[in-house]
Image (cartoon, rainbow, N blue to C red; front, side, top):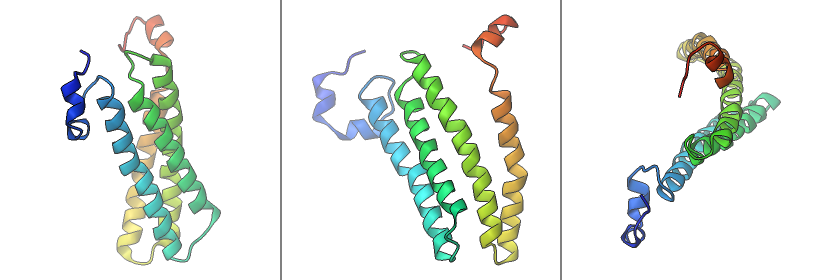
Length: 154
């Protein structure tokens, strides 16, 4: 369904509803991606610097988090129904970059830990990381493999 002219008369509709039709889906994606992962990356980067731990791991974590956000923008902007290949390219960028961000954050959490609670949080992150790695590995089989096995995911 094509948006009507009244949809453009009230700009808050773009940010208050999620819709599968442009421009709402694109604006919602950009708003949510810019406000969530990028801000988390920048705040975590600043937090680690505040603890006097400016190192290449911190910079690498910030870069991988921003690459993850770019992949998420592609995933959210290109729905599977309209641009399947671009959607999957975005997912192929977002998942590994997000996993790298997760592992680098585990290293940084151990480096800046000062209290028992900080070490406990580092242990929790390390315990959850293999689950993320396994889910990434299990998501690798392509649609062709699933069709060959007689299974269809979509």
